[in-house]
Image 1 (cartoon, rainbow, N blue to C red):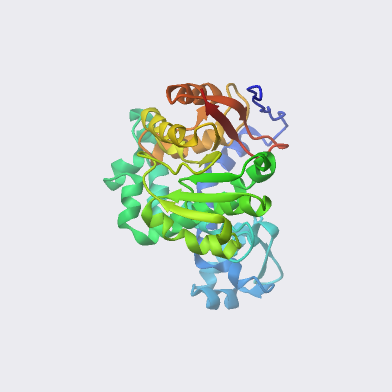
Image 2 (cartoon, rainbow, N blue to C red; image 1 turned 135 degrees about the horizontal axis):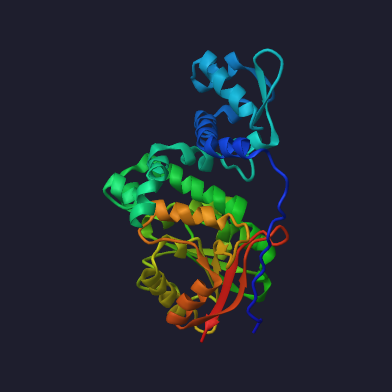
Length: 351
C-alpha cells in the first residue's frame, strides 16, 4: 500500500499593480465573463475559424448587429480572446481558438454556461448564501440544480456539454498523473457521457470500461463511446449510485461527484462503491482543498458548490479521510494539483 501523501504548493508572492488597480481588475471580472460568454454563445470563434474577417462579415455569420458586435469584440480583444487588426477586422488568438466548437479541448460550452442566467443568477446571490449558508440556486429557482435542469432542456444541454468539456480539458490530466496500467476494468460511476472514461481507455489499450450513470444520461453516452473508437471495450450501464453500482471492476472512479453533495449523502455514494469494489481501488477525482493558505482553484470551485448545490463543497485531505472512514474505506494517496501534477485525486481501498 502506498503511503498517504499530499502535494501542494504555495505560489510565490509577486509584485503586482497598485491596490486600486488590482481591486478594479477583480471587480470587473464578471463583466469579462459575460462578454466572453456572449462571444461563445454567438459562435464568433467558429465564424473566425478560417482566418481574419471584418466585423461586418462576422456579424452576418452569427446574426448580430455589426456596430454593437464591434464594441464587444474590441473589449474582448483587450483580454486576449481576439486580435484587433486594422480597421474593423479581427482574428482568433490561441485562447479564442478554444471557443470554437470543433477543436480538441474546446471550452465553448463552459464559457457559454458561465454567462447564462440560470448559472449567473446563483452567483449574483452569493451574498445571501454567505449570510445563511443556504444554496442560492434553489432559493432563486424553486428547485435544486438537477431538478431545474430536468425541466429546462436547453439549459441542460449547455450544462452537459460544459461538464463534458471540463472533463476533456481539466480532468484529462488524471490520465497522465495516475497509473491506470495496474488495472483491468475501470468503472466510471456517474461518468456522464463518458469523456473521461474514453480518454482513459484510449491511453490504456488493455483496459475495459463500464460507464455508469442515470438512464437518461447513459442513453446519450453510446455516441461518445463509439466516436472515441472504444465501444468494443466499454459497456454502458444505467442505475442509481445511491442504491448500487456495477460490481465488474477492480478500479472505481468518482469524478466530480462527491462535491455535489453534503457529507451524509457523499457517504451513501461511497458505501455503494465499497460494496461493489471488493478488493479493488477507488479513485476520487476532484479538487482537494489545501490545509493552509496555499493558492488553489478548488477554493473558487467550493463557492460554486455553495451557490449551486444543497450542501455540496470541496474538501481537504482530512475531510476525505473522515468520509472514507465512515464508508469503510481508507485513503492510500491524496494528491492536490500542482504545476507538475495537473490533477487532484484521492485513492482509497477497503478497510
